[in-house]
Image (cartoon, rainbow, N blue to C red):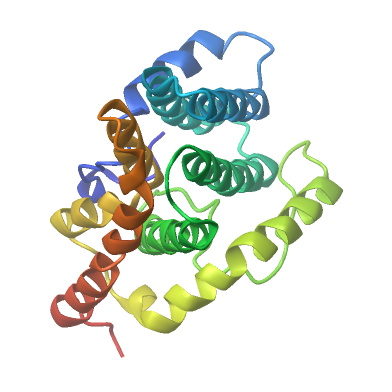
Length: 259
């Protein structure tokens, strides 16, 4: 089952790991492995990449960063195959992502000439970029007929646990999620507060927005590692943030919100 109806599917530049994720999910669907296990596995892949960056094994680091993206696609696919959607998995996935992003950039800071202030700036920019992508993508998913609605446009309160998952686990992870993502959500919502009133977003626009998807951001990191350009990581992602203004201006100019 797709997160989007067929007419709303777009070329997602950040989702290059989907084929691998589907393959891995199909291999695991008849086993005892759960989507949570897969989420933990992409966390392991990410930490191996961090280790490889710290010890200058840049090709291996690039491999494990890209592998992390592929495994990241598998947990959701496995949840759909086993019909076990959960808020625990949804929040744990997001929490892992933001901590791994911080660890990746900290490792780049260690092996490059970047300052810690620049690292914090790049981290802030990466998270703001990803939040814009998720904002528009979740709006589209919620408006898409038959689309996935596990994620909400506005997350104000802890949702009711699904299936056999623990409500306590959902509540705890929701609180962590709101602490680490809440500020970024508020900034993006303030910059484009009417986006959720738009009927839909065309496919070409969402493809453009997907340059800010986590998978594409990680691919850029991997390419810079292979090119041995670790000093460019922080300035690149800080400068890359300028497209936020471009994307929001395009949305407001071309796709007006319904009053």
